[in-house]
Length: 187
Length: 136
Image (cartoon, rainbow over all chains, first blue to last red; front, side):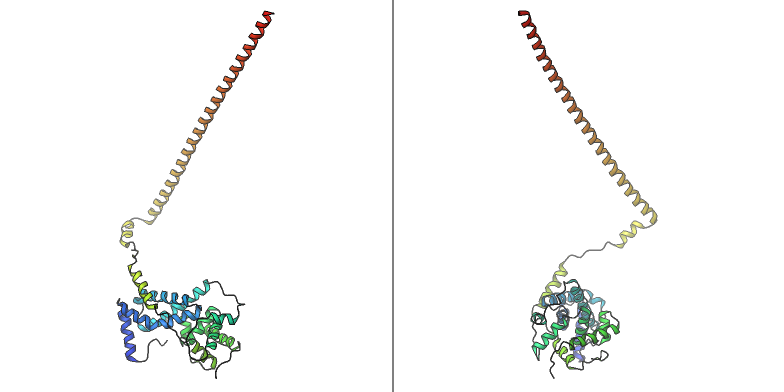
């Protein structure tokens, strides 16, 4: 998993923030949070589909990170730890939550998807995010980790504690299902 | 997409990548987190029982003796509880019997009073009857 920026200066800053945060330096921990908060919040948002749940999950994840810093070896592990933790917490939340009725129309789901400023066709992006919410928890997590975090199947398998072939199978079937939804893709 | 391939290759995958671009949480996210961290730091910590306390208690005493003592203590508690309950039951039975005896006693007294009154009335009537007969 590529956890740190390629630029050696930024990389070294991330490592020094990690070391300082580990030693109890709160401003360094806040910098560490700012570095990872978009990815953690977005993972929670795409998995739960609700902004308030996503904020709560992201907060809990960083509180957990603060407690676990001493057990992490380097800044390299922080990204893996936060991705793994927020994903598992979101899956637990989804499993505990009453399931959305399957009969709900896609149009309604598209309307409920949180608004985000994105480049390109906003309707297509919202439809894709709504369709993702129709996938079961694990395939949804696989697709989000693949396309949001750009993780390869091996890293996804490590994050979700799944066999590599299971991850590949979820990814293939989810993409086939999405292709079968008749979306018009930009050229 | 070929799942083995690490890079998105087709239009759907590129669209997914664009749709799932990370977004920032609310503006107060970090401030809220800092407040929660501060609150967590102020919360009193639950101190673990020092291991030395447990060790000093158990040092040199065989495990079976602890079990036997516990069993004995439990039995003693059960015996005492049963004893107290029996004593309580007996006291209650005595009180019930005393109340019953009192009630019987008062009923007998009442019956005697009624009988004596009736006898007095009968005696009175007999005397009246006898005096009327004599006058005739």
